[in-house]
Each structure stands twice: as structure tokens, then as C-alpha cells.
Amino acid sequence: MASEPNLSLQEKVRMLRERYTNSVGEKLTEINEAYHKLVSDVGGDNQTAAIDGLVAPIHKMAGSAPTFGCTDLGEIASKIEGLLLSCKESQGGISKEQETELSGLMEALRQTATNI
Image (cartoon, rainbow, N blue to C red; front, side, top):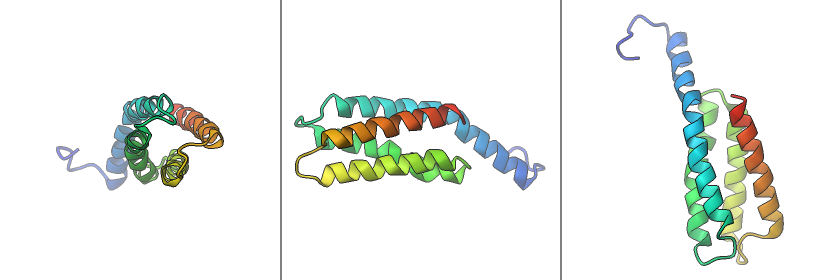
């Protein structure tokens, strides 16, 4: 993009958005891996670390997606982040209800990412 000084601002923004949307699949793979690590350790000794491992990429997506015009994706990621932080604060770890809610939100994230 830096080598294209004659591009309009609108074209540069379009190119940045395209680059971001092209990277969503890779970001989703990282999120899915962290999610599977978390659900395989629900109630386990490493649950806090597994939550942190999912919060990090979800937090990035919650912030970056709306910046590039993917508001629905950002909203879902933000809901997941809030749920994970709530789970982390609770003494009993992730409840069955939270696990079910997280599963639904993850499916919504995948569907939304597929439709970008």
C-alpha cells in the first residue's frame, strides 16, 4: 500500500479492510484452538490459563473487527470476552450454563466470520 501513493483514501481503506477480512480465517483458527483447549479443561487445574488463552485473541478481534467494518463479528467477540471474564471471576469456574452460552456464541462467531 505504501508503494501506491496515488491511491485515494477510500481505496486505501478498502484495501485495509480486504486485508483484514482475508486474515479472519487465520484468526478464527487460533480462536478455535484456544476454545477447544478450554472446553477440554473445564473444571481442570489449567482452566484459568485456558480462559486467558482464549481471551487474548477474542479481545483482539473484539477491538479490530469493528475498525474494519465487521461490526457483527466484533459484537459477538465482545460478548464472548465478557462471558469469559465473568467465568474467570467466578469461584466455581465455568458453569454448565456458561459453557452452553459460550458454545452458542462460538458458533455465532464462526457463522458470522464465514459470511464476511
